[in-house]
Length: 562
Image (cartoon, helix red, strand yellow):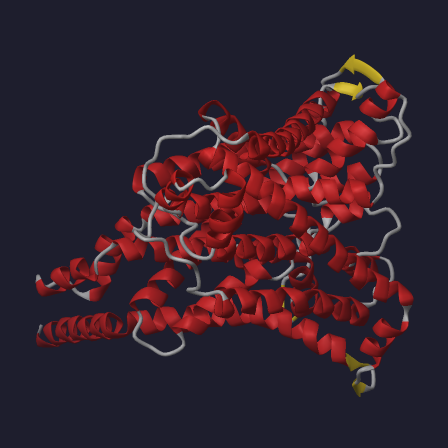
């Protein structure tokens, strides 16, 4: 009897000691585990890419870089990539400003329709515009046949157009946010003093919005050079770094040159990431009150209104036309050639299997990504240890790095023990989790900024230990951030192509890869139908995300335009 009582006392004492240990060190335990995950699934793949670019059969060497800069093909690949990035960046800063200016200062009847058109590409994969432009301007394209044109869509014009339409929302949202935050009294005062609207825009609006314009330009540049689908479909024989990296692996099995191409592709992205986070961080031009104020909409001067409306409406019509031909192409044999109604494209078994595979991968990535993002946000905000900023920077780096590079890194890092993941669904899930982790982390940080630490301190004063506080106070309050991270990761995984195309195995197609391959083969009906089904799924996710943001006050874009 005494021994039984002593055993119960011992076990109870052990339980209290264990609970006390976790109560005192749970944040550090979380931090250690999360840093290990970041090191394995973000830093390790990038490290493999860097090492492989400098390591050959005979050890350390610069021969692969010498080879890169010795061949005109690779030189032109880099040059074309940068030209594409700068061209799209320049065009979208102008177009984004036109859209944002009209939606914030233009006629009331035009504001909402333009905003919807500017944001519509968010619900679609970037490569939808390659498919729609081929349908419209291909050899048997609808407009080419209708107007008897001989326009070649497989050109710089087609590629730049597709990239501009794909990344219009990024430019628009960042510039509109800046214009909304400007104090309109400055512009009104200048107008009352006799300044023309052209001079006001040139001397007040643009200078005050300059930091936001530059941030929008940098983000668009990075996303453009990292995009794989549009250059692969519309680039023709023009070399681009992202596409050439894919061909180096799938065509030649040359991981050394693929790594060199990846490092070269990373370099401008890293430079811009540093510029964005350290040079531009905290810089801006403050207005008198620091926030926008309500003002009566004033008629725009024709010299501003007419060109801005021509540009914005032309782009908006192109966006709507692109979605329209994708929808039409889903239900006819060949748009503009044989418009016979068919349902086969929508019911195609292979495409539905690919979509189901994408849903499974996206659900796994969304759930795991939301858990990791929520825990990371808590550790970064409430932790007392050094290196929290480094953890945040590493977590954000997946968003800044091209998907092609991370895909190459995953192939090399996880094709051998102890991390043998190649050929499994887990390598795709983990790739998407850590690529899109940034938004989940920032959503969590944004929510924690709204939660006073005094709530947790009050709970502790009432006798609750840390474990109880974390699971019964913190997590319920952060649930909206968890859901936001889940939905964002889910819908971006559904549309992702640039990294997962390296990781899929024969017999396990994903929707994005299936769309790309069918578009390459000229089966635009199947590509269109599969794209529309993906768009429907993503649109529902986007709608839920907006409802959560509106109901909870959560804003995942409060930091660096994420």
